[in-house]
Amino acid sequence: MNEALSHVTDVRQGLALEAALFDRPDNCRGLWQSATPALVCPAAYQRQAGFERAAERSAARGWPVSCRPSGGGAVPQGIGVVNLAMAVTVRRGFLIEDGYRLITDPIRAVLRDLGLEATTGATPYSFCDGRWNLSIDGRKLVGTAQRWRPLPRGQMRILTHALVLHDLAIPARAVDAFHRDLGLGPIRAEAHITLGDKFGDRLPGADDFAAALQTAADDALARIDRPPDATRAS
Image (cartoon, rainbow, N blue to C red; front, side, top):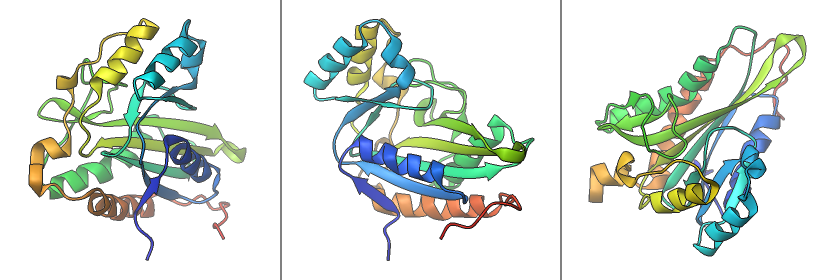
């Protein structure tokens, strides 16, 4: 039996897993967690003055920097972060808001089963802040991002991603220091929350949490209309 959560050595393997999902022709999902800490930022950050020096300084603090193709801001990865990625092929008329609902609805359902009601919206002073954050008690628990690729006949391939703070000692200082080196705005620890903060010793393990997310994500994918000309993965 395959485990729901892929335990990868570093974030580069996790990003490669997501790229493979994006390149597939079917509607699919994956969950992963990195064994080693890192910061992941948009590739556009490499155009910032002083990026190389900032990345070197971050690595020296124990937080090497990797880049991803999607937008947003710098985020932490490592033990305690659970990543969910979903890739779908959709017809014209599917909106960016639909992509965010696709990824957040399964997470909200799992949180609801745990007795938590998440709210959607920006969380000032959080890393990679965005209006499709999921927050608990006004503090960011989940960050989201998307990539879109045009396909023939007006279709689009979409990769939507969510980062869940499961039980990480929130490394706001690491992201904040990287931001300072790049001349970006401050990041504050108190803007974030983890499931560990809410549940303590009663926290479901990362693998159990991922298994629940996998089931909820599969249910969401089953509700996506399959484009008639999409081929099934072998």
